[in-house]
Image (tube, rainbow, N blue to C red; front, side, top):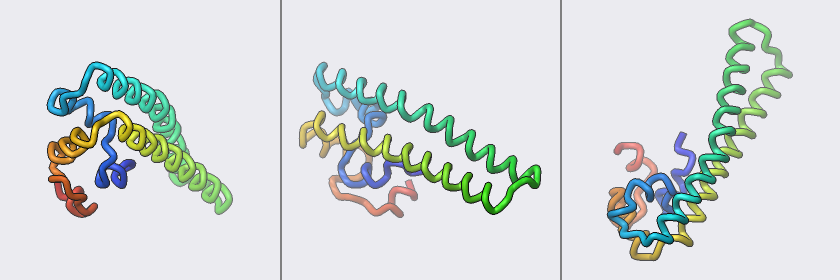
Length: 130
């Protein structure tokens, strides 16, 4: 869904990718512990939201499959899906924001290079073609 694409493309690394690159970024033990804590917290928040989103989408699908959908149920269901998608996206983005305080400027630059951004912010189209 590209939940954190805006952050990723503009110099806000995500905990998942930082953990994948932990050795290449030369993180200290304290930094590693901080990144792991952020990742664990993000996962604890995101997994229930993801499960809720899947349930809401399944409910919407079921309404159509059983031909029980009405204009009111459609409006309520799509609003619920949108709210959960927003909460899930905010969850991912806030952890990208938190990562900025953990990494040094040099580590953030190295992260961009390792992720193939070369220190300049690529366009969204460039990211989708990877």
